[in-house]
Image 1 (tube, rainbow, N blue to C red):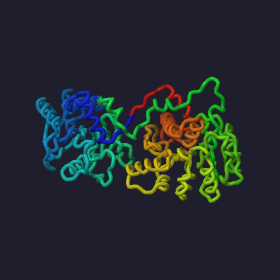
Image 2: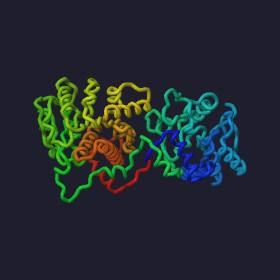
Image 3: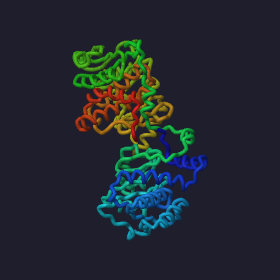
Image 4: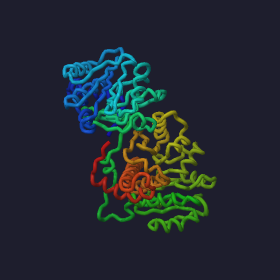
Length: 509
């Protein structure tokens, strides 16, 4: 699914109106039917809808929803915020339609004394301000938002919570943004929905299609997208009857140190589960018995050091190389990593302690092989790239770093962002909070390494690896619960994740 900025979405609305063609009021009616259909299905019959509408088209959507709600025989109160501006033409048409229907109580909010009271059965529908908002709320609108947030009632926002910007919320006061329980977003989620600091405002979000012109969507360029299962299915290699272990590559994993061999075990198991034909784990001398016992399918390359990674075997025998899980950051280890990035003839998968070493030696980033895959969590990325004020700024920095250094950057977290050297960014929809557990990142490294070894491009290996990693976590959490999830479970459920992809199951956003 392509993602667009709020300006681009407005353009797509306009192109749909012009080229379908369809009148603005009729496009608004489509949105209202999608919204009211969801509300009528999901809310109990006794619920009273308290509709807060602004002067723009977002308010027009809300007014039309109130009419549909009342047509079904349910109760609605409608409050129209007086912003000192006339209603948009389509919003005015829907106000008149609501008046002619005569079933909803319609009132105007001109001052704080007009703020609505709420009762136990009330559900608030927020249609005050839409995605066209360009500056923080203040004055009466901000006071109304604070009043609604303090009501303790369930709030459902139309398209976007009032007061929230679609991308950059730098300097936007949190107290002046609606805190929705659910956001019913039209056609596309907004980029700001994917940032952790905005979760208290957006709540759970649902995408409701409203039939924007497919040709306009296809022809409008955007660097942003959310990965879907059909995309992943097209990336994964198909196995012929005459395949053998050499067909699916030989991966080298450099991992582990004294006291941190678990990271090497987790990543090794994941690489093999991801389909690598052969795996060699390069570990310190004290770790080879652990690998032989825990991962009997893996071969071992043994470092001269008893404690850590200091050197690596000849690289020409391997189709993919990963480095970092549990290796530590000691001086000898740093020298070994520098030699590896200088001598590697192909892209590397770089994670964990290898990233921490790069953060201490940022000038080495220029030496990292082109299209290498770096998989930082937010703390590691901050050390690598510097401080930012919020997730939007961090996303732009991630995009710039991928482009400047020609790297594939995987910023881990909810909606993991994979930034490509081309400037494209793919957000991942799979995964859950149960995966916030020790070793989860080591499993991801192994999955990406295993896919890269099979001949996937670095971009495809990163995008598919992140998706499968999250999907395995979702399947595991469904059976085991989120609190009980461990990193080892992700590897165990990776096979089921592949089966779900191959079966072509769709996932709902």
